[in-house]
Length: 319
Image (tube, rainbow, N blue to C red):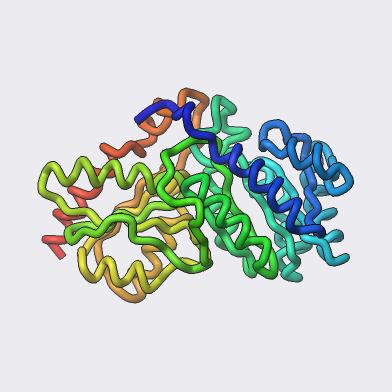
């Protein structure tokens, strides 16, 4: 697992490129910045559409309040900040001013999860999936690659109401073609298997594929499902896969509490009870450090996923 693949653009680069595309096709898109456009790669939009770029500064509650006002006036507002500040500092404005009235606001949460450079606990956000899933009327997506992020952003622009999507500061090999599309509530089976299902979201789906390669050497046939749409989630695909495999591992670049792992477990508890093990950050803050070092420290590497799959298999036998 490489520290980061410098030959592949990071997801935040794809965000900047797609934002520029949307600026040309969506005349009513207004971008609001919390003094982070160089980090989020929104500089291109700022330079090309200065009249639709509003610099709010480091005032995230105002950022979301202004976005709500613009949405009420018929604009598609995109308040941009780090996931940590969207999920913590401006949560009341997001909930009451945007989600409650179902306003047409699209929220990119940047610098999410473990690969947040060396920013430490103040800027790292592992709880955003849990927080955003819990807000009524808000759709939540965690795209896994650059093409996936582009598809999520294009779909978000034509989706009425509030949307939250993650933008990870990381680069992973592309899994999809340039014409890749995204549909709310639909997952994708990337690898067919019969023994255990690996459910991934965001960049962790690529880790799941690497883990499946490790498992196949031992004769374990893992199915890999990508769930970029975290809310709504693809209940039918989850049930169908686990009916076949009998056990599952969920893998997310986030806390194991309240995010993908819980979303999948909720579906299976209601429809198809089976052993489920969760890979993610476990009830702790993320320290400052190298990306590979942090993934290893939190037990989120492909080897860790493979180990969880082996354990899930033993629990399947006991059920």
